Figure (cartoon, rainbow, N blue to C red):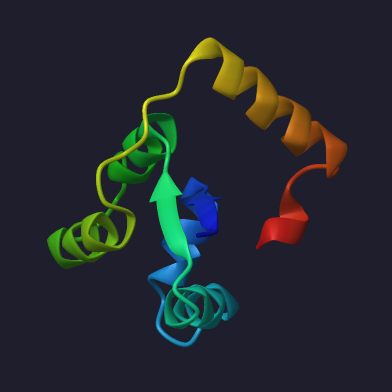
Length: 90
């Protein structure tokens, strides 16, 4: 099964009904793609402002945040740097 890790910006935009990210997320979920979020991105999301309803929806979508260790952080940074600035993900 494919798993996609969301970043904070994508999650924020995905919660805006009708946005490109909302449509993309719905397509992934319909295709049985698993979505997750790192503990760091989750903490950033919770720094808000975020409505309680959006927080609950997001928690339902991503489940328990994935811990981020040094190796994962280095890989994430390498992937981010390889794609420019990450703007293509939005």
